[in-house]
Image 1 (tube, rainbow, N blue to C red):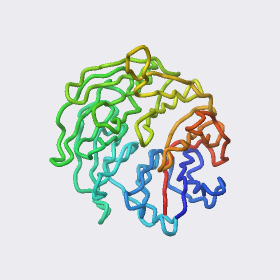
Image 2 (image 1 turned 90 degrees about the vertical axis):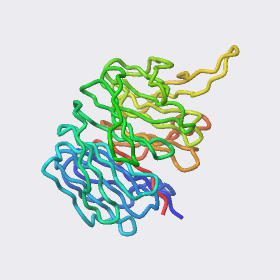
Image 3 (image 1 turned 120 degrees about the horizontal axis):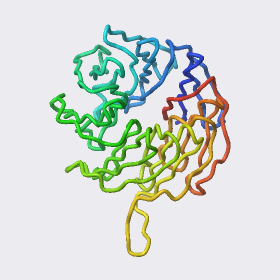
Image 4 (image 1 turned 45 degrees about the vertical axis):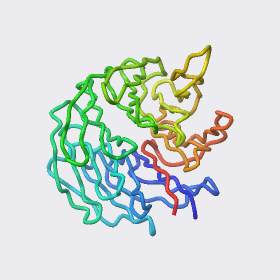
Length: 305
């Protein structure tokens, strides 16, 4: 089995396929205009790439690393966030400026359903660990849309901080973490009541948030401050257990997409303006090295094949 990073170079319309055995770019793929976000199917066979300014979704065969199909729709207007259901059968796509969610059949690669959020700038897609719920941050409405996956319906919207973008559910399923880019905060929210349990200050313009596989850490990419906030989700101190920023780690300029390897031993951060990927050692919580890629890498995914 080989490990790869799939890195979207949004300002040269390419994808870098990085072999993690050598930490070198093995192949470069030309894409539609402005590839932003990316997701790999659970079986590792296909990759979906939202090309935001091209208003298309490129579909890659991971056996050949070739684009085999392109999806278009009249209501694609800056297609951006992507996520796949736990069974791998459906792709959810958030289209930022049309403020709609598209549900795509991953067997036929056809759009099955289009759901308006009626909120401003619906930007990302994040599934709960059990796969039953989707969370969609609406940057312009300062809230989160909640969708029921089984019913393929919107359940509710609830308020968060200004400019929410990075969103993820802790692997324990109990808490939703939201990074609010306009006031540099992290909200930790009870998934049942939508109550904000904790507020934390993080770096400048936090735009992406991911958990380590074991849930011990949340990593937040801070675009303007060029660093990553490392949140220990259950720090124990003086009889208290709390989520806490234990380190703010400098990386490249304009940190963006973050992904872990399967074991959680390393995290990889796309640095938009230094055109490289930071390799973070999760044992030492330090940057080990960097991988050179294309111009303005942003979206990033991990693949084993």
